[in-house]
Image (tube, one colour):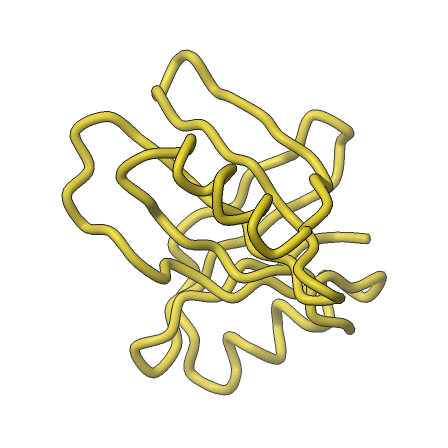
Amino acid sequence: MKFAHLGVYVADLSAAVAMSTVFDADLVCKWENTETGLAAQEYDFAGINIEFLHQEGRNNLGIDHVAFSTVAFEEMRNRLITAGAAEEQQITSGSGKRISFLSWNNLRIELMEN
């Protein structure tokens, strides 16, 4: 398993773009879900990826989750649940990979199938 990214909700995605420019961060990916109004832009800040998220009407801003990717998705998911994590939801990405969001000890974890 490896660290994937830190998810941060922001009030304005254009400000995140400006910050990435200041720090010479490289755009990794961006996506938008028009159904939910959720948009994201992920940048590589010298080896640490930050996924900036924006959703109209969301007032709870700041760090939302820490993401990890693994080829042993089911094993790691089960280990987290056995350790006391509660699964919030599991979705399938556009590329067919499983993604699970879990809450554990006041920390939200995104576990991504690699």
